[in-house]
Image (cartoon, rainbow, N blue to C red; front, side, top):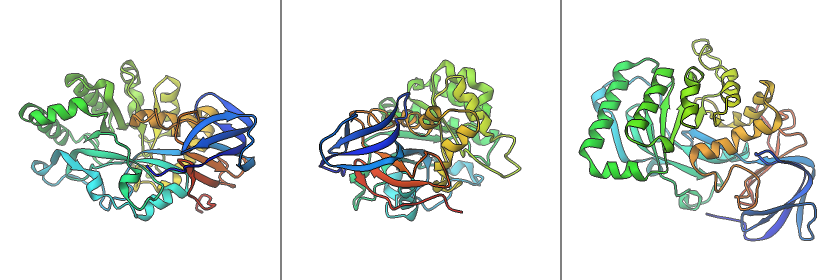
Length: 360
């Protein structure tokens, strides 16, 4: 990946690391795009943000950034669904798409891109940096994520569709030795499921085919109804879209459910499901979490560390800590203050953003 080869530091008035530590008036020392240490002193060159708060870069764990078709819509011909591990989202990703630029300017430094669509019910997703390199491979994580789109927000209780997808999955597994090998070697398996019945189905499927340790549940507005089952197997949950105002969905999408999942010990992160929600609004997530009774440290972990765990990239990103990528968001003063907004964004130590604030 592209990186800043130089050694320098960022002086921050306050550092929310994304884990349990908070530092004040400290230097984040960066070399070759990686965080070297957090220190009270530094004698080399540095950027002065002594009046600002620094947080990890936002991680968008589920989106269609750079993809030009909708993931939503009722399947017209269930016999025509595509379930193919060679259906790879990178082959159709428009890396110059304005949505990727918007993502990084609003603090999103890493994002998962979904292959799922109206007809595509199994395919291979991708995790990218949003730094805007001229070549995609310069920003691509080498992670294999297989996605099964079991249920979209508009397909609640579509029993026939769900049964058909699972039937096709079992046929693919039985008849295709290569698919069995792929499933055994992927880094993560995402299953998009909305109703609690679909979530339970996803957990049962993962047990049946022995990938529970790789499973991430996506969507999951009704996850609270099966929270104990999810927690039993330590399965991460990507809750999304995390804010929705359509009266049809208000009884299902409730931010209180996110807090409840967090409080019972589930590794929950938040997604815009872009374009269902504008990617620019992901920066609202921690402010909402605080409003709904999480503290500053907990709110930070939801969009950083927990999202990294859901994607299986926690060795590289998610917290401000030695050895991690220098993906950093600098806030004007107080983190998550939407009146002041984001001042700067760094991806692997490279400054990539102009000054922006939440759109009116």
